[in-house]
Length: 173
Image (cartoon, rainbow, N blue to C red; front, side):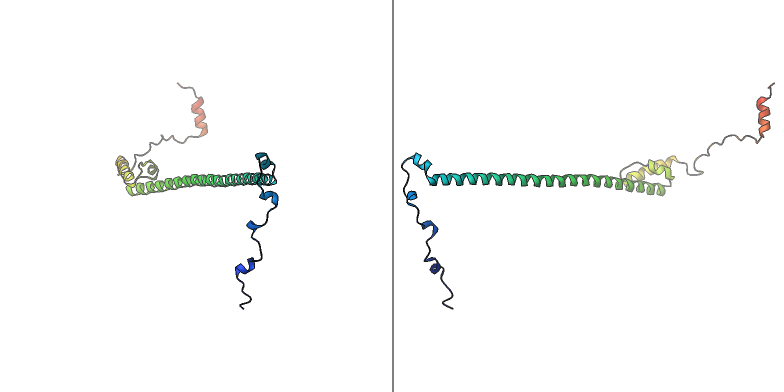
């Protein structure tokens, strides 16, 4: 067992670390002038790496921009859908409130003894206001005998068609 376990330093003893790898002699010697620096292979290699890194950075920035645009587009769709649903909800809530108010008016009109057609004439936003209006409207309606009778047209005696013709075409004296 002691033979199977190796120390990490033992495995690396025969290897040369990458930072200490021997370099070609041309890289060990610094260039004499700036022209030599610009013409050196190392400078060209670094310049190519820089251009590749800039290109990769530009691609990443484009990808990030596209992802942000897609996220905003998706969020905008959800926002539009939420606004649409809120509008539908407010319409439905308004209909429910209107039905509740109509039901309350009918209940108060029945309690006040008002005829059903007058229930819609009750005005007010609260139950108390509707009750007050029902009292005022109830005071205007006669309690005994109800409403005055509707005038009936005069009855015409039953006459035959022949009598009608005679009366219509007979000379009047």
